[in-house]
Image 1 (cartoon, rainbow, N blue to C red):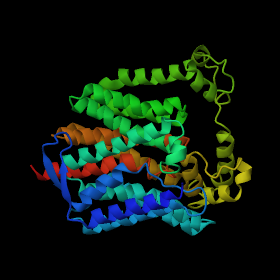
Image 2 (image 1 turned 60 degrees about the vertical axis):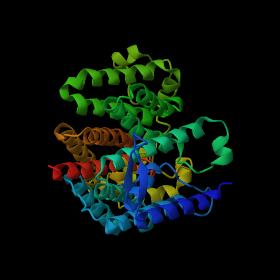
Image 3 (image 1 turned 135 degrees about the vertical axis):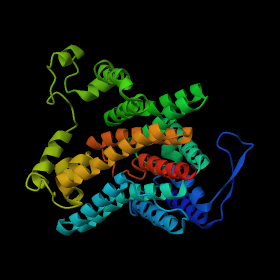
Image 4 (image 1 turned 30 degrees about the vertical axis):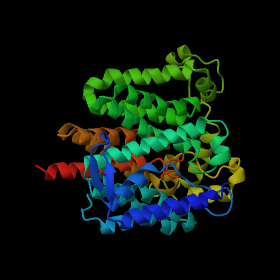
Amino acid sequence: MQYLNILYFLIISIIGYRFLRSDGKIIKGAFDNTETYHYSGTELFWCLTFATGLLAFSLDVGLDLMAIRLLVLEIFCITGLSISKNKVIISGALKIYIIFMIWIIVGLFYAPAPFFGIRTILKYLYPLLLCLFACSIVRDNQVFIKSCLFARLVGIISIAISFIPLIEWILFPGVIWYYTARAINYISIMIFSLGMYYFTNKKKQNFFYVLLFLAPCCIWVFRTSIMGSLVAVMAFFFIKYKLKSLPLILGVFLLGIIAIFTVPAIKEKMFFDDSITLTDFREGKVNDQDINTNARSWMWETLQNKFYEDNKLTGSGTGTVQAYMYTHSKEFSNLTVPHSDFVQQKCDNGLIGLILYGAVAFFIFLDAFRTYWRARSAPLQLCAIVAGASIVGVYATLYSDNVVNYSMATLSMPFGFYGMMLGLRHSEQNND
């Protein structure tokens, strides 16, 4: 059954290519079915690609179909940029991203296993290409809203598949990304739904979607995704209310702390000793030795001692960590990824790489914050607040998950929103 993923991959790739090369088609309006709009071929491709990042089409053996899908999408994005009639917008944040890409390419030249370095580079490249494609193509509010609603629909279907017993294992094995990737993807869709709550009249419906996309990480007790979701919500409120949001942010933070000590499933997963109480935390009796990291702390320390401590500025070369873990997987209980992109960045590309990549998120957030308060249209405000909040939330998950490995499903969302924000902002400014 899993080999049907090859067929699914071919179908979606052919549809994507045909969209890119087509003259477009008439599509119904995002909110009013009586209205129709003409979407160009590149706009159709954008809607398809942005909405289907959750589809992995993986195979357990043989062909690495996920890697091939990633490469094909990158080729399609480059093709789309070459035929786009609009110019690419290179913001300050994207300039830093380009510098980061140059730096990790330099890291290939002193890496012990360049092949793994190339694979790593392709994973970092995709969000950048998708962002550049979005800012070049998405200049219309309808395309922005339509692509987001389509992405949310795919997310809803994936949640249904995830929680209906046996349906995924029997009918859709390997079609959707791993559960950890899904939970991180849902952060951006949850924030979009929160934005729709404030910017549309459909309050109950969108509040339900906020809870729906927040629920999986809580049910699955994915601590990293729970943290990312809370951070994203705090960033959302900060953009919307500025300093007036501080009580709200504090409330969300305290809610997270209380949940850690009062929700049994989270508490059991969080600490070695589940007798630890909130009172112990308030009295400063809880330290990092009490936190159960599932041996991640030991793994991170081992990797950093081997590849970072002697090369703090430059690291040991792009792809070094992945190459070592693949060839010494038994040393890490058969794990082949470090479960921390920040640790991997430090070991591969040193402090220079880590600072550059962190600066990308900081300047995207800053750009989104400014755009939100300067925008004249509600759609641009919506796109800006979602881009700024989702990038902060998803970046938070890099601390203890393999977000870059899942970039097609995870990083593509906030960078896609940011690219659309740049395109919509350019359109608004040129319509003065």
